[in-house]
Amino acid sequence: MSRRISGFKPTGPLQLGNYVGAIRPVVRGQHEQDTVAFIADLHALTVQHDPVLLQSRSREVAGLMLAAGVDPDRTLLYRQSDVAAHLELHYLLECVASYGEAHRMIQFKEKGGGGGSRLSLLTYPVLMAADILVHDIDEVPVGRDQRQHVELTRDLAERFNERYGRTFTVPRAVHPAFAARIADLADPARKMGKTNASTAGVLFLLDPPDVLRRKVMRAVTDAGTEVVYDPEGSPGVANLLDILGALTDRAPETIDFRGSGYGRLKTQVADAVIATLEPLQRRYQELTDEEIEAVLAKGAEQAAQTADATVRRAKAAIGLTGGR
Ligand code: TYM
Image (tube, rainbow, N blue to C red; front, side, top):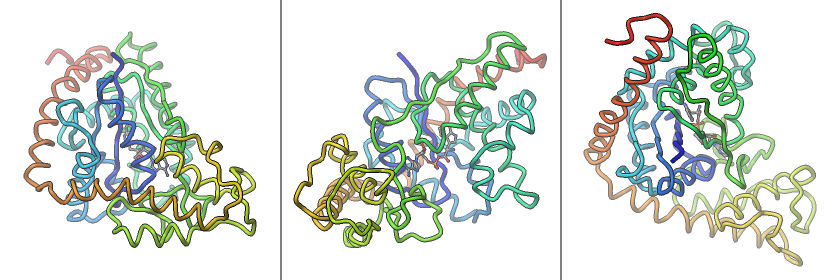
């Protein structure tokens, strides 16, 4: 059975891109695959953060994952900072990664990486590699934005194995068949992201239905009138078709809107988004903080067992006292 991992940074409220690109693949895959899903709260410390908000956001992310159908009996769900092995392996991997490699990462540049940014922003992808390698993962289902980080993970695993003997499983990135990158509705050149400066084009999983509908109806399209799937020429319309396709399990280019305009497309997208998120929001409201924390505590205990074993193996290989 192959093993998969997904991570979610609690830097803001989860949005539809997280759901389509990562949460739903976890829910759908958890019956056939060994699945690990974790709240990447250590990663949230790489940019300015509010300590109180971080705690509540971490719990919110976990709650939303449970509400979306992540089954804690099938998926190992935990909070990254509860399992120290991530940090131990992070350091060992920093000793096989180079400064140049970390510096080349697109997200470092996109997030304004420069002299004043936190050092952890630069080493972020190495921590991500540790997250993956600590669990002997085969597949990492991520949106396209994370592909480069998974490539770095592969490089570090191969380099470590070559230098110190076979220690890590070398993972690969897998992308959802459709909608691997949902764009911001107000600015289709940007990806939909939980920290986008304006929230007008971001569909948050906990937005009330009327807000979701308003955001979809105001989505940027273009001066045309015919609905045609053309990601290059008409990215706003293509993004709406991507969303509709993803939520109704159809390839976007096969959705037929001949003879009808953008208004009808938007109405259908809004209906599909609301039909998906309303039941999720209802289940989320029913969960208590205690229930969520109990799931996370049990998950951390289980995660530590396998993760500690990997760290012991890596320490022994690199010349530290790994046996203890
Ligand atoms: P994060 O928290 O930004 O996003 C979580 C997951 O959601 C996907 N995603 C999207 N997919 C499609 N369209 C979008 N607009 C969109 N926005 C986000 C992301 O690809 C991701 O799968 N670095 C990671 C967290 C992480 C991680 C890991 C992931 C840390 N360690 C180890 C996998 C394995 C991140 O920032 O995800």
